[in-house]
Length: 204
View (cartoon, rainbow, N blue to C red):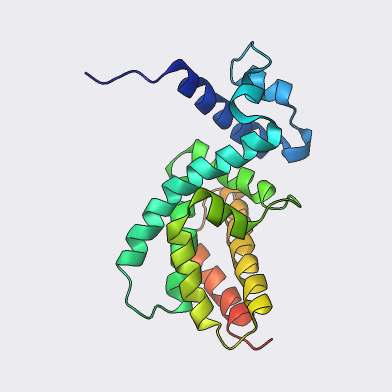
């Protein structure tokens, strides 16, 4: 017999989902903790603080949980690659799992839009997120990207790596908001490929 989720786990998941939905709809700055609690069906005003410490803690937790799910797909894709992948291969690894999540349901769409806002916060650091969360698939992919860019300085590589991540997420956000008929994932990746070649395989 399948064990029922603990009440605390249900509350935590409800708060994360409420935050994703509200931030995707209204924007990061215009969502209050009170709204998140109300949308999650929580009467206890201290529930958010108990589980996450703060609104920022909730945002980090939302990113962490979805990221680990996406990362499992990235690892699967990396394992199927050749030893010396091209930029287009790595862009596929960066972007397709997130696009597949958005294509799956409304929760995935909300997450992509939510993420596009979360990564613009001044305190967001991709390197720190990789380290703290243990995003092994993304780290492997970036290590491979670094090898393609080894003719550049470490600072230049770091900047281009961050731009690639931001570009992929923001592009997917616009794709999620596109009215039907929407472009396919392959069409979106094609657009990113053209842009990325100009940005990442040129000299500093």
